Length: 368
Image (cartoon, rainbow, N blue to C red; front, top):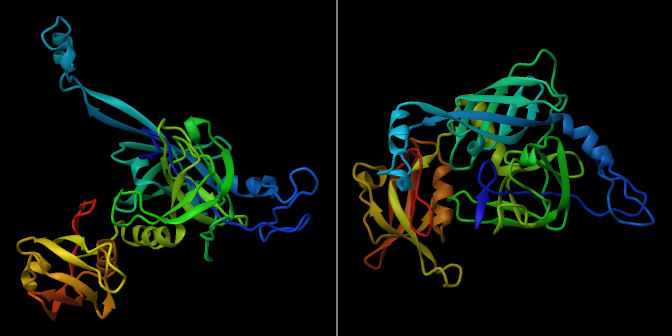
């Protein structure tokens, strides 16, 4: 099953670039060597150029102490643990990140910083700088940090083009706390849904990603960030050649929102939804409402359990993920037109979109 990369198991990766003729250069200047290994890009120049923007992130948080393990209850050791009740113990963690602005903005995963009471960013030259969490977004597992440096920092740009299956990529980060590590591979697949939430749209890569790589960048040969390493599929917790990265096209607007407002606001209806006839041909599917929250936008608009939503503002809706992501992209306060089937009859219902509360359901029946 997929694992998050910080303290638990192994994580992500994904990338982009094309094979080039022997001895030619990519747009990033990565040379393709001839002879032995012909056709493979030389990542040395790329690594030298982008690594100064890749950072290590150390976090510490406090958790309640004094918990009595079940196997020690009723033993002489129980008193010792109870005397520690009320004390708090420090929990350490580590991850990766990258600088997107020379003034000190750093992108990482939300699960890296979590509920950390202290975050320290380490640059490639060993400089350690305390970081402030600007904002986090649980649904996309993204976070934005700010550090204050006496000099301008090296920053890397977001990818603005397309990502293709088979493209070369390079992952960089802090696996197992080793710091400044790069691995290479290709984009194995796109649009992966690994069951972590309604915004799953991961890039899959075979570039080696391990615990500590969380939040690190996935580069194309042009030195652009095409993804943020987030999770891995592994039976052991270590890299098994299947990593997942949040694509830049999804991450960039979230990070911009965090930088501007410190949070991301998403539209919300207040319904539990489930795919209807998922095996049916396209054009004959829909999203069935399983439940409606009281005093929610959907409740005030008169939506009912059993209604089948087929379109939003005239655009066909065939999956729960499609509906959730479409509504999430609408600013709270705006009205949308839902086309639905009720008791065999089609009708349109106008709903004023609300503000999505923290959290949200996962799995086949999802909250929207």
